[in-house]
Structure formats: structure tokens, C-alpha cells
Image (cartoon, rainbow, N blue to C red):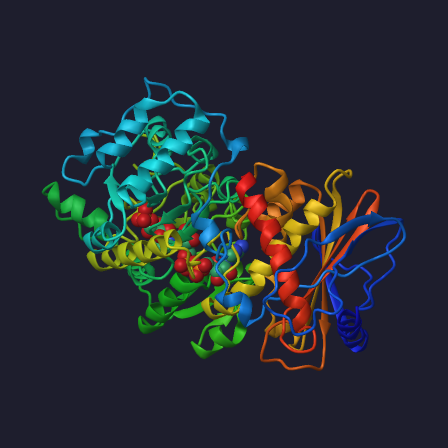
Amino acid sequence: MAAAAGATSRGLAAKTTCSTLAGAGRGDSAASSSRPQPPSGGAATLAVPWKGRKGNFTEPAPAPACRMESGSAFRFLSSASSRWRGAPSSDHQLPLQSVAENRRCPRLSRHRHDKDSPTLSNPANNNCTRVNAVVQQTATGSTSTVSRTRQQGSSAEVTGKPTVLVAEKLGAGGIDLLKKVANVDCSYNLTPEELCAKISLCDALIVRSGTKVTREVFEASNGRLKVVGRAGVGIDNVDLQAATEAGCLVVNAPTANTVAAAEHAIALLLALARNVPQADSSMKEGKWERGRFVGVTLVDKVLAVMGFGKVGSEVARRAKGLGMHVIAHDPYAAHDRARAMGVELVSLEEALGTADFFSLHMPLTSSTERMFNDAVFNKMKDGARIINVARGAVIDTPSLIRALDSGKVAQAALDVFTEEPPPKDCPLIAREDIIVTPHLGASTQEAQEGVAIEIAEAVVGALQGALAGTAVNAPMVPAEVIEELTPYVALAERLAKVAVQLVSGTHGIRGVTITYRSARSMEDLDTRLLRAYVVKGLVEPVSESVVNLVNSDYISKQRGLRITEVRQVSDGDDEEPLETIQLQITDCESTLRMEAPTSQGSACFLLTSFWKVVSSSATRLTNQE
Ligand SMILES: NC(=O)c1ccc[n+]([C@@H]2O[C@H](COP(=O)([O-])OP(=O)(O)OC[C@H]3O[C@@H](n4cnc5c(N)ncnc54)[C@H](O)[C@@H]3O)[C@@H](O)[C@H]2O)c1
Ligand SMILES: O=C(O)[C@H](O)COP(=O)(O)O
């Protein structure tokens, strides 16, 4: 065990930090040590017969002698070195391929379709590409959810292309891009039931804000849906929790409609100040009412931009051009960015008490929902004016009506509504002091083409195994990090798979400590992928769950799996991201510790033999699946 001991003693000198991901979430810190700790209670021991094998890289390793033994720890050695990179592997999934290779999720299989389910044909869809015939046949062919899922998989294999359902109108550039790699089914105006009926035949779904992608949709997909693309910014119409539980990636198109939305806010600002729509209606009725439509000037007025993100800052820039004094409220915005634009970031109280105009640009979240309520309106200056191009539900409708009735708020301009389209009797629509547009913020030709391409690229990328830079419910791991960590990710998963076999028959895994030894500083080693694939390796062989980067943290929480990550910063070479990965598994009775040196050098002779051990066990697991 000399090499292992050597590796360990290097670790002894290393700086160690750790974090814990447990049922309660990340952030607990747990005591850790770089020295292999005697397991508390029993220990599972694996003895690898490596002695005398130094330098022998090709000879097959004898099967490992596994012994579960109380009171001792052991080390299990492997490699993710360059040898690993070249090695063909039957079950090696690149990290993000698994997002796109999502298979089944029985927890989500409650909903079944029967022969009476609506079929794929949709009259609204006449001029669009249909799902291919093979897939349509599958829609009516089977009765069991599981067999349906398998049939769907084989349909996709037959056509060699995934199926993308485009449920709302998307620019032609985006459709063309999708068609290069997928069967594209453009079916607009689907009812929730129709959407649920179709979704189990689709690998990806693209929507705008008009389609609610609910938990029922994810359940009805039977695990086939791999990516939801939101062709726009706001993702409040997608049940992100359900998507995450299903391991379904959600991506959006966050930049292409920014300018369009900002321009629409400015259009509403001017229209509001000068009563443009009201005057237009009046003239169309044959009237000439110059005295009735006297407006207010914008120059030198205070505009509070509420939400100083992409749209908000573009609005601020334009309003400054109109000679307005612009302040902004955004608890998360950087002061120096605002200052550089000549915008003062202020508290909510200050914004409310100072501004003549408010332009709302925050996302709809649990904390912004009905944020503009009686209390907030009452703190505004009398006669304030409000423009909402964000989301309808950030304003409490009855409070706005009261504020308008009392004169606290003089006028409002609304592009968005709590319910869209608003009900016929919505009190906001008919009022003279409110101007309304039907959610047109992103509706310019340029923005829609841009959004279509942005979302099509993200969806295609996700289907092909890349992690979109615009992922909403998965950590955004930069492409170069993914590339560099890929072999280590595979190793982490295999270590976990071996570990789970070794502790099988006991009472389930309670906690996992993953120790990464690296010469790199904390900031230079992103361990999220590695952690996700340890969870994958631990959970998939013993359950029906499909684990990927999207849902690994959720699944570990759900299973009460306490994950502690320990970082040891060594003084070695920082060219390779990792020197070793160590897994320590605590089950109810024992602790199992396995370590995989990842670099070449003194431990190399051990690496080959373990590699084969890992490879064979992994293959066996794959066959079992
Ligand atoms: N009407 C339309 O067609 C249209 C078009 C584009 C965007 N939108 C809406 O506008 C919103 C903003 O878009 P974006 O691209 O600027 O997003 P963004 O994420 O760039 O900006 C949102 C900003 O709101 C801030 N914020 C969050 N909570 C806040 C709070 N309580 N108070 C103040 N600020 C808060 C965030 O810190 C962030 O800076 C989107 O979420 C979307 O709902 C509407
Ligand atoms: O969030 C957005 O991007 C806008 O509200 C636009 O929504 P839309 O795509 O439905 O126009």
C-alpha cells in the first residue's frame, strides 16, 4: 500500500476545506481530516492484490478480493489519467449527455395515455412540420407506460432524430435550425390536455409565455422530455421544481428580446405621459379634444427603474436620453455598474418616496409577487405613474385600482397581466387612466428572430449533450471545465458504483464524503459535476431514478443522502485538476473508503489494475440495467 500511503501523506500536509450537502442543503460544514480516519463503528474493507505488479500496465488485474471487515479501512486505487481518456467505455456518459439521455422516471409515470388520448394531428398546425409517422403510430399503440416509453425510444432510434414540439410561434430561423437535427412538430394553441397527450412523444418542448409547462406535463412525458426551451426571458410559466425532479433541463433565451422590451417600456412611458392611445381613440370617434389630453413632460422628472437587470438598465439608458433623472431599486444589482451609467441605486423606500414614474423590470418570484400592494402604493408620491412590462402578478390588481381611484396613482401602462389573456371583465382594461397592450414587449420581428435562434441553439445543444449557457435549473458549468473534468467525472461515477456494490446488503447509505485533492485553489476547481456523478453512481444502480446534473442535488436531498465535500489543496502540480478523489461511504454499520489517484507517476502501477476492476464492475452494472 506504499503508493496509497504516499498519496495519503501528501494529503496530510494539504490544506483541507469542506462543505456538506445534506437533506438540509449545502453549507453545513463538517469536520474533516486529510488523514484516512479509522471508521467509526465497522468498516468495509477491500484488499486489492497489487503487490509486485509495479510497471505492469497491461496484464489483467485479478478480481479484487473484497472483504467487509469491522474495524479497518482500506484504499481502492484507480486512475482518471490520460489512459482513462482514451479508454473505450460502455457506460461512460459525458456529464451532459446524461441530461439528454434521460430515460425513465417511474415516480413521474402516474399518468397514462389511452387510445382515446388526442392524437398528434392538430388543425392549428397545417402549415408546419409534423411529428413523423413512426412516432404518431406509437401515440396510439401501447397501453403500458413503461412499454410506451421504450417504444418511444425506439421510434426516435428509427428516425435517428429527436422530436421537438414547438408549442408557440417561433421565428423561422429557429425552426430551420431545429429541423437540421430534429423532427419538429409545430402545434400551437394546444389545450393542457393536448399538450400532455403529445409530450410523451417529445424529447424537447419550446414555448413562449403563453404555455403553462406544469407538473402534469412532466409527469405525462414519462421521463422522455429532456429539455424545455423558453423562447424568452421569464420562466414563471414553467414548473421548475417539477422539471428538476424529472431531471429535465430548462433553458431560456435571456438576451435577444431585451432591447425590444426596453423600447416597449419607453413607448408606454411616452404614450402614458402624452395620452397617445386615448387621443387616438378619441379622434377615431370623430372628435377633436385638445383640452382633454394635456399631458405631463418627462424632462427632469424622476424615473425609478425597479429591477436593474438587462431590460431595466436599457430602459434607464434610454430614459436618461429623454432628460429624466433615473434612479433604480434592485437589491442584487452592482452599485458600480449603475454608477457607470449615471444611475443611483436606492432603497425601496427611497424609490417609492422620490419617483414620479416607476418602470417595473423584476422577475416574477415568490418575493416579487404582488410586491406592489396597498402599502407600497401608499408610500408613493401623489400622482405617480407606473409602467409594467415585467409580469402582471408583481402588481396586486385590487390595490392598483384603489390607488388609481384615490388619485395616489395618476395613470398606469400595462403590457402584462396576472392572467393572460385577462378575463373580459378585468377591471384594468376599460379604464381611461390605464393604457394596455397585449404582452407585446418582446414582439418585434428582430427580437422574435433573435429569440428563436437563441433558444433553438440552446435546445439543440442540450439534446446533443452540451450544457446550455442559459440553463435555468442546472449549474452553469463552463464548457472548458466540462471538457477538462470529463474523465474525472467518469471516475467519480465508477467509484460510487463500486462503492454501492461493496456496501450492498447493508442498511443503505447514510453519508458520503467526497475528498478532492488538488493543487488548485478552491476557486479553480469546480466540483459540482463530480458531486453530481458521485450521486449518479450511488443512486442509479439501486433505484429507478435517473440522475443528472439537473436533479442530483434534489435526489440526494430526497433520499436523505448527506454529502460532504472536502477539499485538500496540495502543493503538487496544478496542471491536472485533481490528484485524487476519495469516497468515504458511511452506511448504518460501516464506513467504506476508496481513493482514486488521478495523476500519473508513482501510483500509476496501481491505477491500471484498478481501472480494470472498476471497468468490469461498471460493465456488469450496465448489463444489469
Ligand atoms: N413584457 C415582455 O414582453 C417582457 C420582455 C422581456 C422581459 N420581460 C420580463 O422582464 C423581466 C426582467 O427581464 P430581464 O431580462 O431584465 O431580467 P434580468 O434577470 O436581467 O433582470 C431582473 C432584475 O430584477 C432584479 N430583482 C429581483 N428581485 C427584485 C426585487 N424584489 N426588487 C427589485 N429588483 C429585483 C434582479 O436583481 C435583476 O437585476 C423578466 O423576468 C420578464 O418577466 C417581459
Ligand atoms: O419574458 C419574456 O421574455 C417576455 O415576457 C416575452 O414573452 P413572450 O415570449 O411570450 O412574448
